[in-house]
Length: 152
Image (cartoon, rainbow, N blue to C red; front, side, top):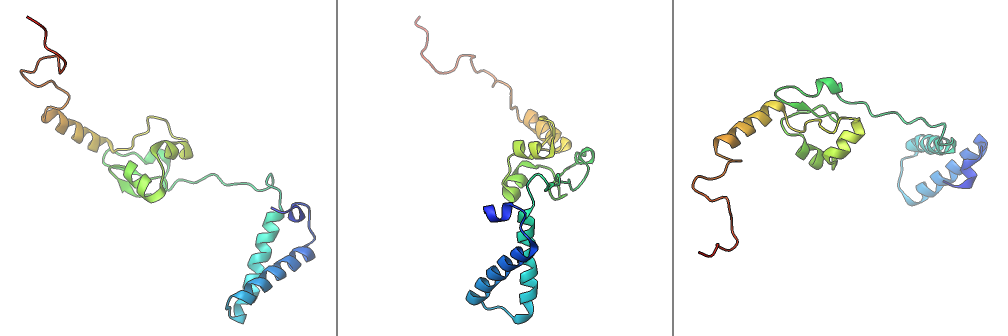
C-alpha cells in the first residue's frame, strides 16, 4: 500500500487516481463505453477501501455451513466449509480446499479429537479389520521375528 493512500486522501484525489487507472486500463483493453462508469466506480471503491486503516477494517469470522454441534451424525460428517455430507472428510478437504485436518480444526476452532470419519463408518471399518484378523498375531508364528537364530 502506498504512503499516498495510507494518509487520509481527499475524495477528489482518490477519484483522480481512479480515473488514471481506468484510463490506462481502457487504453490497453477493449471495453464497451457503457461499462466504463461501472469500472470507475469499482476502482474508486477499491481505492477508498485501501485508504481505511487495517485496525478499522473488521474481518468477519468464517461462518460454518452448519452449526458445529450438528456437523457430526452417526452416518456422516457435514463439512463446515460447504455443507457436504461425507463419510470421510480428510480427502474432501485436501482435494477441494487443499487443507489438512489440523488446518481445518484450527480454522473452525475444533477440538484436536474432532472426527474426520463418520462414527458408523469407523465402527464398520473396525469390525471388518477385526474380522479379517488385523491387530492379532498369526497362529504358529514365533514372537521373535527376523534376526539370527540362537545357537544350540
